[in-house]
Image 1 (cartoon, rainbow, N blue to C red):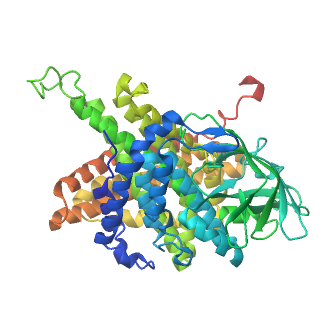
Image 2: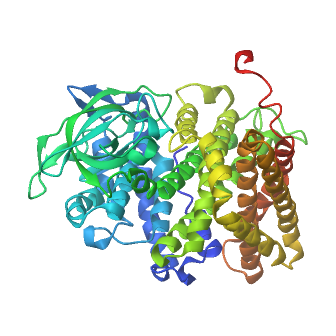
Image 3: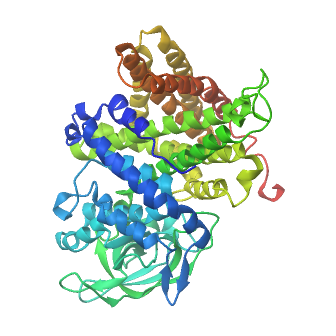
Length: 589
């Protein structure tokens, strides 16, 4: 029951859904099927042979703090070295800094393989990618020359230090201070918590990006600046030298991702260097937010994929009871679990969500490429709208589907001898970090929907309408009609929220989570409609694997009939307003 990369489905999404090599996005013409398959096969080999076998090791051993250094589990150094030496950390980084310059979409596809195999280990290079992006966007030429080659290769790794004991989302409350020095640097003092990969022993240096308040910035988020604070101060030639005033005080004992060192970090007059403009730290931080949150949305379905594979294998192997229509395997004492309708329902729910979420995530990555590589404002607005949905909806449903996979195992899924407990525990964090899913829902309703007068959401609804009108094939009605009904529910929900918001903002925000989920279902309904059209075209033309395409269509029909009708439920919740949500005084809870 070892994880296997779903190469056929990755190929289908890249080349039939997105038709990447025919795209006008710069760099996409090079992504022909033979090239992407070669890249993904190598990523799959690394995932199967190196990363996946370390997953349970990391869960059992975890990380430990010894004499001021965090020690990683056995084998993790070799696994991380394999990622670095294979060039996987440099896939979409700029060639001028040692990267391969591939589109972000290819980073996303490869990242899925690594997350499914070993989410905790992959987080180290994932966070480094975020630090790379922030410095690439806001660093001075000297900062880029010093830090980006090392971050590209992961010789040095990166972190983002935002949260403090007294504040998480409300960053205006941070207390970390940055005092300017005569040489142009700053002395950073404060405590940060929940710092993923805050310290470890797998790299020569760790580059901390730290939000802090410098003098003269005023109150709240307007006074926040972003600083580069390396663990070891590089000398003039870029060689790590003196230890900076940065210390890990504690490694958190968490529910899951035990092999990801989540640290309490103390900055005691640490030397830091301003990144970007003074008092504009929030702008610099948000540069990397779309990519970071899409990456977490990917984690939601990628862990569910690994759990689904284990559940599928167990259902095919484990024998319990008989099929109600007669023994499926009369020569055996019992039939495999897969004969039972409720087991099949659970597996279909998982498969339909995972494949739809993969399609939405890859489409989102292509929109990021279009926005960045073509300076496309419409693509940027659309992906900004979709990001809270991709992050919030996919991690909520991803955890649900991971627990559903655990349920297929029954009692054996609840004991630590089997992998299902780790999958469930690891998947849970994705609903929390990079902004809790409640924050994602508030961001969607409060910021993204009204942006530019609702231009982005109207564009999205236009895409859905066009998709519903584009298909004359009678076989497509099983997809277009449910999507049309779900889209109507979304439009009605948007109207209800607008009316409620004018009367009572609490009523509108009470429905924010329901709106995020309703929109998530419409997004996956759109993806399934597009995938169904591609599958039917391939079957009609005799192209592709007929068994795979037939299964694709059946899986899509399951989503449209079993999952998409939840849109009506979410609409009913939104239309009910926030009266019951806000009814009780605080002391009555």
